[in-house]
Image (tube, rainbow, N blue to C red; front, side):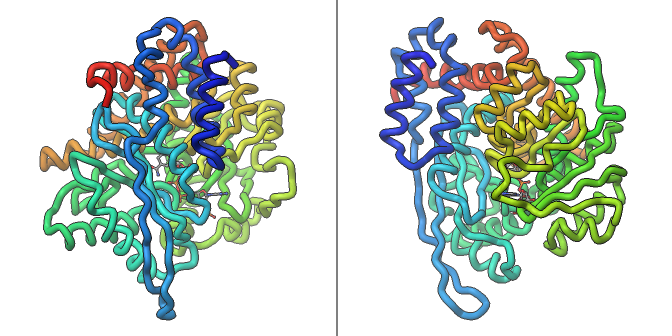
Length: 453
Ligand code: NDP
């Protein structure tokens, strides 16, 4: 670690105690940027990175609501408005009991670079609540979303801050929040993305993150003259990102064999085909059940319960060529990374945000795997959110084919931006450096143009 990064990190840790995920995200970016900052002392002088690390605004809100038993509940809500140098704040809302300030700051920080990579004019933000939608009735989820929006509506806006979904926030939650915004403000404006199709949503938005991660992997494979045809793929998670990752992999001739939820994972040696995927989608999106039921329905598959006392996740210990972590942060530790490599995996395209711990990332880079970090590989979701904003402004909808073609084009340009930046700054093939540098430069130059604000 350079002296500059060491002193920057000491300050970040002192100023932001008890935010380990935020420290982790900042350190990775700061290390990637060493050469850039050496070659461009003007960024150092203007303290551009120091400014990017500090959110422009952090909003914390009380979210009171009443459950079905008539009892008052109190949750904590957040919106981190991280950086608006290249456009309105943009980034998802996460509803999960683990949500806290540090996790949302890491996500908002990553979002700044990701949004910059998409080529679209979007700044970075993130938000959410420690509310757990699991086990709640639709009415409880609605009351929570309405209460959350009662306060959030003051801070967001089509040209200010445009949230979207993330873990625990899908079409249902976006609908409830949009309805409440419209009721309070008496205006029909694109203040959220991921909306329903007949009220301002974009085709391909639900699919975009998963499809995009697969397209990013396709671009990486193409650098070695390969395709997905016949490749076995490990996928974690069984939510929005995982489902559409599996769908696109099937379309491109690959064989996905795993999916998971927080209770455990299934391994299906016959492959998850489209009929089985339809079962997963119904299970997760309609019945809101557990992935364990997959193995009851398809007896050739095995279900392995999550065991937090293990030093690794057995999902990452199956023969395969490709892996798509699509559940949550830090789900691949060093041992998992070793297992993946031993089992033949040489392509990792991250649907989730920061799913690999730093030692795992270093191992992938050392072994010269095709490793696509989340901020590049999963940028398809926010890219299509950006396209949803454009369609809302135009009051016009593009066809499925048009949006998919734009998504494909954006993922290809993110891929080439990463490749070029990695080469220019002396680390060819290193997508981590490539993504961090390419994402940083656009934001940094905008900040230099706009003065010290
Ligand atoms: P969903 O809520 O739809 O699905 C999340 C999945 O991951 C569920 O299967 C969930 O299991 C599992 N999961 C969540 N937290 C944990 C945990 N702590 N341990 C084990 N499993 C867990 O979320 P998304 O699919 O939208 O998001 C998945 C990842 O992709 C996140 O990292 C998110 O930040 C990232 N992402 C999402 C984008 C989007 O457009 N939705 C865009 C870019 C990135 P269970 O149901 O049991 O909790």
